[in-house]
Image (tube, rainbow, N blue to C red):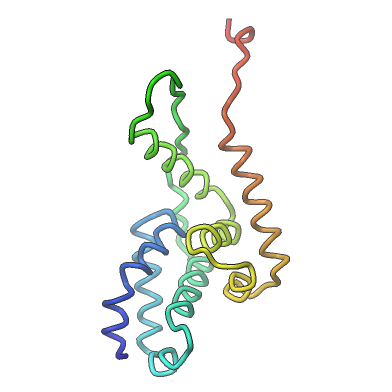
Length: 166
């Protein structure tokens, strides 16, 4: 397969992956562009790999983890609106919850975010994630545990004491 065919076939999926990983479409496009430039230069070696797309995704993760710009942190810190459970939820609630989750993901350290995206968005096992990140599987589990604990705290419904609001 030539590079142009690979890029045309896999670019949308790699961009979606980078978008979830970075939380910012512009940054995702920048990261993927940088990676594709390097992939193009090394395509003869990369295409011979058993799973060239997995290798490209590893390059995307590494580029994201070392990215110098910090503008991706400007994801608005949204929170889900209180919804009266008596009404049937509409599709907007799902979008609001997704946006709130993406905002909280954006607050996580980069490696923790990468682990969650690789595990839950890409569906990769810890051993493959460890290989991508260059660490031990136990480290991956630790990152995931800390990230999920942070998300549970941030995404937990807020209980308001009615006495204190009077």
